Image (cartoon, rainbow, N blue to C red; front, side, top):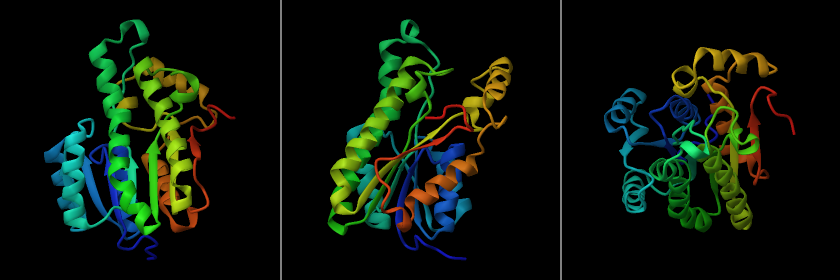
Amino acid sequence: MSEPLKDKVAIVTGAAGTMGLAAVKVLLEDGCQVALVDVNGQRTADLATALGPRAQPFAFDISDPEAVQAGHAAIVRALGPVDILLNNAGVLSNNKAEATSPVEWRQVLGANLDGAFYLAQCVVPSMKARRFGRLINTCSLAAKTGGLTAGTAYSVSKGAMTSLTFSLARELAPFGVTANGISPAYVKTPMITEQLNEEQRQKLLRDIPVGRFCEPEEFAHVVRFLASPLAGFITGEIVDLNGGLLMD
């Protein structure tokens, strides 16, 4: 099997979740050493053990800048400088503006946006020095629609993640570092199976032209492509993955 990313070091946040784990698996298949980052330390450790020695677990809170710096330092000591960063960790909030508390607002922005920025700050210097890097951000259709089912804090956090992607892409292009986003809608995760009711799910299936939800492996395939050396001329792009729900 070809290993186009052999010996590259990747960080995947939210690695213990459905989408994160799918991405971890394809990066391992392509030859990466992968740092699995998640707040769920035990599950992350169990997954890393099952995946083999090229998968290493790291548990820390990405919304805490000091924890991110310490976590990044531990990853570099264990695996070496980071080549690929997938900012995939996130939490969903369905509350609209009036129902969103200040605590919820900060929690959602912290998990969905702040952590991506803090980690990018950590990995960018060595990427620039080595003139190679792949920053991949999990955005969302909610950034464009205002949230069909998602709440205000979530939609705003994903809109800001899109803007962060553009800013990093513009800044880092001269150094061989790309920054792109993936904008999925309604991937088969607990956000669909547990946080939406059956009526909401059936309405979405009627609205999505392909008539089904996105599989986690389809998300992972886009990660694989954007991480590839052959994707070096693509930067500042947000790849829609929504089954035709929004075409623009």
